[in-house]
Image (cartoon, rainbow, N blue to C red; front, side, top):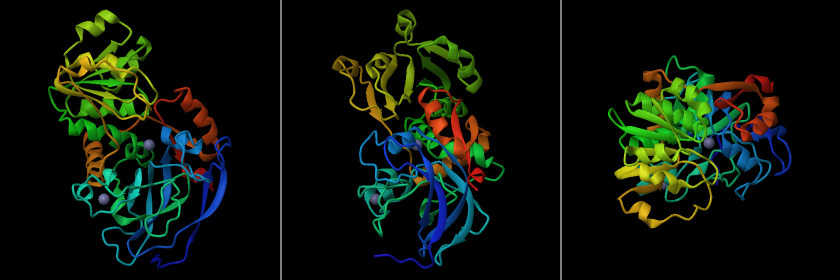
Length: 354
Ligand SMILES: [Zn+2]
Ligand SMILES: [Zn+2]
């Protein structure tokens, strides 16, 4: 069943057509506006590790062509007949999901990301109404159900804001969930796109932030982002003396690694939260959990919480550190991202798509 009210919109974008192919220009159509849709002209889109994994089918299940991108900002250009609250010219954003059932217990609690009927991903997801495969923000426009459109606060830089929609909310949500605030001691593992936002957000919430890293060369960067301390995970003595000292560990590393190594750092009833997808967990001695230490995970955040995060960042005046690129440079950006050669997030200037 479709309830499309207007003609389709011709769109330009970049797509991967096979796992081993670079992204290339791709013309397609966005659906016409349904009664509850918003048409957004995209100005910027951040580049997330998930984009690369999906383009290359690293997790399986990619449906080609894949148009990645779920850190989307832009301006409203048109709205469906039943849309109120959004008007042409509004500064808006779209994150990792574009739909959910909005009726299940989780959706009713504002946990649309954990919709019991499955949320709809911004790309490589299946549209709930017509079954088409969703296409993301490496594109000049997108049509999104109004409930999944966020607002960019007044005065916030559009380009720099883009990574908040995935990297920002993915770190903000667990920090809030584990009640990080003034007096909290938080360790952030990994200093990439997610980690650098974790440091900034935790510091803005009033926490004392420590960056856990394998090398000391990140010291100056960590401090510049708001960390007070750096702890070398390779330094046995330092790790030993830091035991039982953290209220939360925010682990942002996106590849397999020994998470058990960090558990002794936690105080009782405190948690290490994994926000990256690292596949099978390495073997871990259950003794690590007996101190009532918690190993858990977290995925993005709900829609209301995402808006709260955007407003918090505007109020505290914090934004991701970005490197702006042209759409044509996306494949090079993927190569550099794989080598962690970016501080800290690439953002595509969509004007270059013209
Ligand atoms: Zn992402
Ligand atoms: Zn639901």
